[in-house]
Image (cartoon, rainbow, N blue to C red; front, side, top):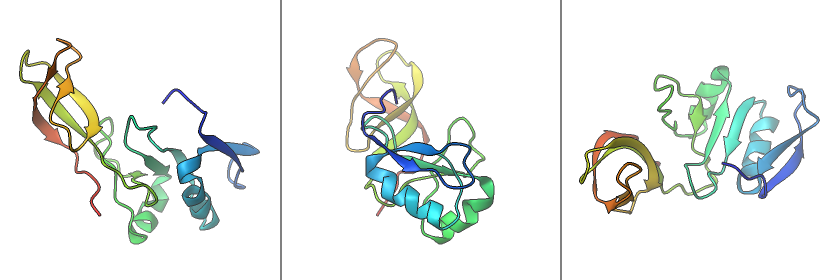
Length: 141
């Protein structure tokens, strides 16, 4: 999300081609724990208060993640893939939906805190209410 300021370097697992990997501090312990369980991660991010946090894994580890209680994070670019998960260590209040501006009818994918009722339309630049066109289920606890 444009900044590495909140990352820490962890000794990379044997499967990595790197000696160290930068992991966001708020999910570093959880990612390290997954590595210790033999799970190969493909990427992760805490969301930086801009987007939903996620932990990506190799496809073969999807059943293991689900068995451990992880919820799939829908991927709008690859909607049939289930290789991204909400971290268990972050209480996620972010959701992503396809929305439509009530003023100019522009449609876009928005990631936002689930309690808000208005978004800034990227087309008309107005703060406006919006219509949900497609839902991504938020993580519930």
